[in-house]
Length: 491
Image (tube, rainbow, N blue to C red; front, top):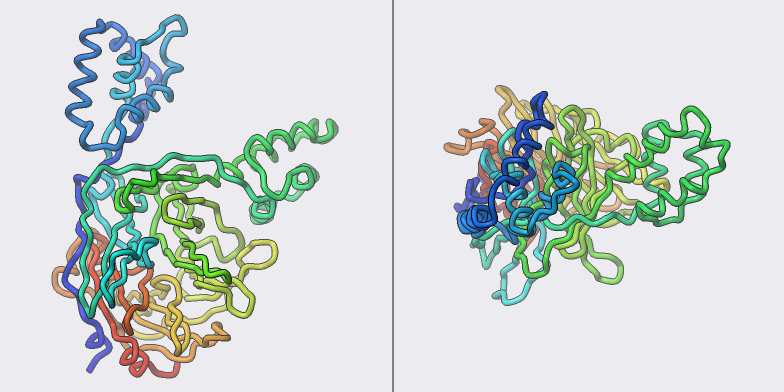
């Protein structure tokens, strides 16, 4: 019997659905040298239309696309506001003309046109109406569209009873939510400035002037309180712009209460993530008072640099996004422990690109340089190893699902067991992989890959969602007791 014999694939899969589209701002010729001329010329042509033409074209557009989007008129109005500076100041456009301008400066984007992959699984906020042995779960998904641009989507999956698994319907219009100003934290700003070696008289004065929690207006008010002698220093404006950039990398997104989870999309909203939000690792946390909340790490990618960012949410409807700070946050693949251990906040990471490490959050909110836990040592993981999501707490210890990369860039999923009280100690490991790409799973956008961002324990088994060849999502189930028995002391 091999390690893979412990794993049962469950049948249903999630495949990319090109009908899942959002509306984005579109500026004709924005990549060309004559950007201003083309956009302004388009608005000039729209202004030449008479009222009947304008109204008719708008109505036909709404009839053609209105059923594919949530509150399309509001989106057109927003896009008009973004380009209204191109409308001559002496022109007062009618409401239909404003909406038509917004329509012409819009385009559809299929968030899953290329792939859907790399899921994580947590208990759903709504556990009503279930039969005994069932658990409703929320699945986060990496959605990949045109240009390899990644966003975060969701699905709902019902587990049990027994080994049953059902994927809820995912139809309906999508929404990227409404962005809100973040309530910034002074200590996180200080941690970010420390990371980037911005420690001078201006930053020190600003941190002294700022309250513990502040909004964008409060930041500008603090600038107004700076001593004149500091404002005249040659480096002051550059320092203040760096501080603005750091605060603007934090934001919040909220969705309507009646919008189902599977219709919510977390879309890149800052320069740091403009080329994608990748591989969210969600985990459910219950505080000392029994109140649940959710945390997730994800990789923010700007086309050149990667960085770990943090999502926090009480209900998977309102999300707050902040960069993570410290040496351990400079690479991919951070995964938070679901609770403090020994009074410390811990996370798995891979800051060197090939080794699973353990990092601690210090009193300055910086994730410290990690302690190595597991290095590539077996044939199926000699290129690199990493985690497949947050540690799963069991009576045997912290179960860590891992991924390893072998010859021909062949991915596999394995497992480690960490000591419950001293998680820097690996007390057991699985000799072989739990899961490798099998049959049709080997074919796809990136062949021979199986990869997960987090499973969970339910009814005596580990339930594992996984991406197959960065194209689709499959599901597997592993009974916990046989898995633990198959593990061995580390070599």
